[in-house]
Length: 428
Image (cartoon, rainbow, N blue to C red; front, side, top):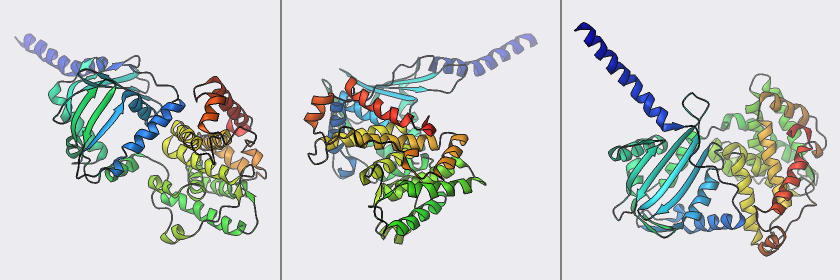
């Protein structure tokens, strides 16, 4: 009898330990269910822009219901751009007669169970709110009664405690007609503010205390150079990275370079980078006119802005997102007869991306940037020439010459830009 009890005990122990392992082994798989999509083409980018403009949640009232209409192509393009900064995640949306199929594949760190977490869910057409039909994690189907509680828990963790129910209840109906999805939506009050707060908490990028010394130095240098006429951005980068080198003696060179680049992005690019960092500038500093119109790269001030903003976006949103945002800007400019689509601007954008990526890639690379830039007297040490590239093209001219951003001609032009960047030793 004692032997029987021991066998039963061992059996239940095996079940308790083995069941979660068995579930995990079936939930985690060797391959992705969804492959990462390629770069969006010109028309995709325009469609995504139009969709974002058409249904900007900031313009929606929390007092009334808005119907959102989008094709699966538009939704997948928006997802492609939104997920571009997360290299290990792929997403996809499809429609069927019974609802919307949403899939996600997440590449995991090396482990004995598998490399990918594949999630698939089906949201059923419904005239009474959000209704989940099925949810799979790998080969494991989650019981329907657990789907909403699990989603509620996840949203509370991401957006904030108590925020999940208003978000879930904000979706009043879901309808699928052909390739088009119709969602009737009444946003909760403060939805955008809640999402921004949640995003800020989860984006770890420097701190106001780290960036302030560099921003103060940029201001001081701008005041000193304001009467000199045209000067290179190199006149700012040299002292910035010299300061980064000094502070690295008792700190992390990667973090110091990051703080220096963000100060540059704030001053020469866009003050909204403070949303990711926190309050760097005082009220007085924000009210002051920035003396930067005389600063140049390749003799052009617009290159300074492209370079600084792209460098900041790389640190706050990732390399892929920064490159896509640069292309989106040119697509928009293509419709503007005054500026047009410019590979010169994309060159400055990609240069900013590579600069920020390499300057913060490893400790040894961060120190190399400090050594090179702290003594650089020529901008050729960090910025090649782009002024000979095609620019100022209208949408029609761009399509006639290059077709789209997936064409061989377009990719060859991008390869030409990257080759020039690669020719500078510290970017290899």
